Length: 225
Ligand code: ADP
Ligand code: ADP
Image (cartoon, rainbow, N blue to C red):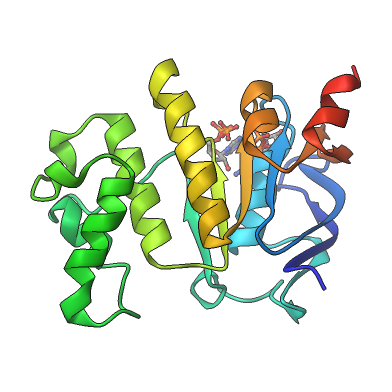
């Protein structure tokens, strides 16, 4: 069975007559990277927020490893999240920010492991610095390292590369993809950037006005207008 099954998910916000997410269904395999692609306002973030448990669906079901988690609180889901507003703890060094997520690992190994994660996102030399000493893009990479350090079964990424400049975006994207593939982590990425979706993901879901209107390999999605 797939790692994640999303069935008929619907969400409408108060005061709104249209569905923000309109009967969305898909499944995600283990180790698979899926991109949800579409213009601003099409329901990508809302979908992600329901998967994370921050938003309650009006209808539908979310199964993770065949367990119904539709009503589970976020902390019970073993899902890692990197949103646009990558809130790091401001009073903690980068190293502490990362080790904080590693409670499942023995204390004596936490620092070494955390340094490995920081190295992976190119910030090992900054381990003793504080978040406010970094650029937005650098903070985002630390947030990514922190999420990965918790070794979640599924990682949700909301426009994770948007604060990086073009050159860094491409290399980070490549590295992240390799990293997820190596770790066998399943990923759902939300983006409005077609090139990003097509190069990062194994499958691309195209969203339009709350609906998932296409779900296919990057090649096939690209061929269709
Ligand atoms: P994105 O860039 O992913 O589309 P937005 O900038 O649209 O995200 O939204 C940022 C935050 O504002 C999200 O937490 C979202 O839930 C919230 N938000 C978006 N649209 C509205 C709205 N019409 N009313 C209230 N909150 C909204
Ligand atoms: P996307 O991430 O694709 O930009 P969103 O999921 O943020 O889309 O938004 C989908 C729709 O829901 C939009 O019409 C948006 O204005 C609305 N919306 C999002 N968040 C809220 C919110 N907190 N309150 C009311 N409306 C919202």
